[in-house]
Length: 82
Image (cartoon, rainbow, N blue to C red):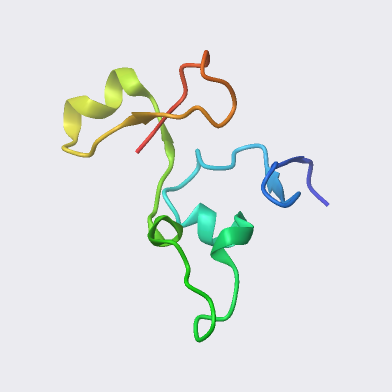
């Protein structure tokens, strides 16, 4: 297969461009908390939200979308998502 990286979320393997190539419901696909039978499992609302990593210096210029700093990798990294 294609090279990728492992997420801490249940060991899912994702492509190196995970979260940066398109704004999608990434958590719905890869977070174990977002998996399950809808008739028996309450799935958290964040699972259905689309997001992607963005350039914080250029994103706000042409958009009303909020950007937030992620601390998933490390609080010291300047990685943002929208």
